[in-house]
Amino acid sequence: METLGNNSRHSIQLNVNGINYQLEVEARRLLVDVLRHDLGLTGTHVGCEQGVCGSCTVMLNGQAVNSCLMFAVQADGTEIRTVEGLAQGHELHPLQKAFKEQYALQCGFCSPGVLLNSLDLLQKNPHPDEAEIKEGLSGNMCRCGGYDNIVKAIQEAALDLAGKNAG
Amino acid sequence: MKPAPFEYFAPASLDEAVTLLKAYGEDAKVIAGGQSLIPLMNMRLATPKYLIDINKIEGLDQIREIDGHLEIGALNRHHMIASSELILEKCPLLAEAVNHVAHRQVRHRGTFGGSVAHADPAAEFPTVVTALDGEMKLVGPDGERWIKPEAFFMGYLMTAIEPDEILTEIRLPASSVGSGFSVYEFARKENYFAIAGAVCLLSAEGDRVKQVALGLLGVSPAPVKPREAEDLLRGHVFTDKLVEEVAKSVMESVEPDSDLHASEDYRREMAGVVTKRALREAFSMATQGG
Image (cartoon, rainbow over all chains, first blue to last red; front, side):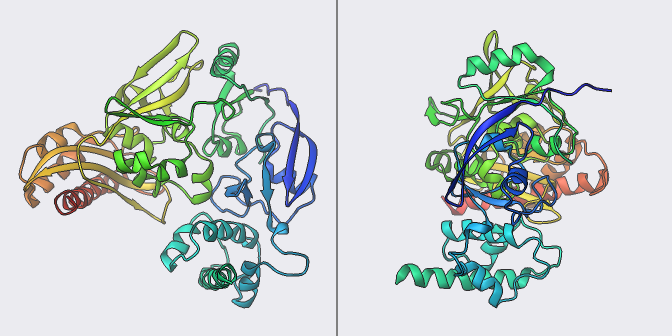
């Protein structure tokens, strides 16, 4: 049998949803597994582990990335935002509110990733049209097939956020 | 699944990275954006014992124009390529290609050099580099060397990079042949791996094609630059008949494989179809867009 490499361990610092964490991780530990298992932030889901389903999407230094396609050691010194960091106390984020109002989730497995990717999309393009939303969400799969309501919810959240920024 | 154990290094300089590669040879793997390598490691199709992360090396993410060429550092991420003013102005075909590469999450992390080094024949960047006859800079223990696409891309996921070398830069001609360009792909779903695709950069003089660069993806073990088809176009009046001839020539120059997604014959047929559509799009842009 082929011999395997040594598993090096590394000290890293992460800022997740505004909280600093000092951690020791194995080199092979994926960022998503550190978030879920070491920090208990199980809102970020693991789906395909190959960058297709998008359910592990988080914001890394303000950009949506697949946390299954990154080793935690590579995230040393970064700021991460997960679905747990969207709501302010009991006040849902405008995207979460819109998803609730438009019934934009069925089983909910894809929702955390869709929410974080949508947040990134709206930050870069505050008024996306339907085609831009669909293209923007190409890296997120909803196995319930509930895409129509997801698109509607993002449109609603865009209006809500634009109003907030204007006011 | 989860990746097999490995030892991780994040060297701060190119010298250090090359020293590590020299020491560990084929047991080591370079990681940049990781968007192709980590899926392989997660599936344990790749089990490197040593991972050399080049993200901390400075100076690999520059984009500059030198002597009519763009020199693009390997660590530029896809979204940086798409938003670089220099690339949008001097190599818009490359910026357009980003719109077809995977998804926004992957474009934030994946790198230009990583995609070229991974050498997936269905990927956009290797094909653009091949079509434009660019050049790759490889740095190893004995110094650096530059290599052209047709020697660099050796086959499916195979390149001329030696185990102790790192791809650091890619050179492309700046605003090489003109004003019309197109990336035309046929895929099962938006942004998925293309069954067949064509990239085209073209300039026109009246109703004639002046200069043209063509590239095909997804239809051979490596990116294809159909030189005979380009010769048919260069200096000739752009007619439907010529476009058909070019497509036929392209279909003869590709070597598609059959797989789950498409048969060999279907891919060959589609190579002709995407060529025609890319050519028409590029020619119309070149003649109308100025």
